[in-house]
Length: 276
Ligand SMILES: [Zn+2]
Image (cartoon, rainbow, N blue to C red):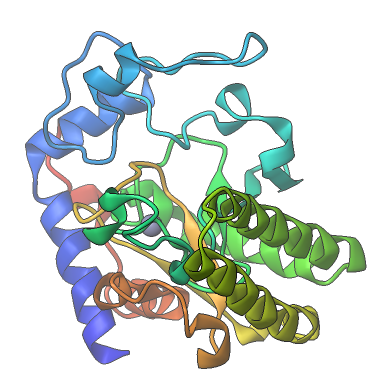
């Protein structure tokens, strides 16, 4: 915990001392589509913007957007598991089981697989434009918004319907990748599908029994991010649920409590921020 507190404080203070980043943050919050960003990470590249295909009912992304900006405008309703006044809960778009992404299925998986960070991995995303946990707004007013993100998940998980929705979402992502595997008519593929299904069947009933406090709630600090919009990662703490999941983000996974402890011990001095 101590080293994660130091990591958070270092990244937060580095961002606050970077006048260029703060200027960009200002443009980003104003949704300025003409601005060329270079300091803020995790925004959609011009190449990706040029080649997006969007369903008619959804709004295409414009420059400066990240994949989580104005989430409901750009994403199908079915991705949203729960909505509060301030945030959305969405299921992770990659399966928790990295065995489902073998290099023989797709060579791009040999370098990096898109797997999630644990069974039932989901994200809680503020509706408002907040860039990352290092954005001063993330911890303003005694960490109001991040507390809301966590409380949203706790309330959601406390209902039968919430648990069912998250499990259904986990299954549909998992099953979608199985469907791709099934298109390979090989023994190797058949055995893999059977193996991952047996793990899923073992984990799903135990997952439904978890309590809200059995989940890790954590952030990844900028600039080491792929999506430039604050999101709380939520996934089970127990190793059992993470055996086949991504561990490559562990070094930068900052537990929720590390952030709130730093903010009570060494709060960010907002009045000392350079003026953009
Ligand atoms: Zn992240």
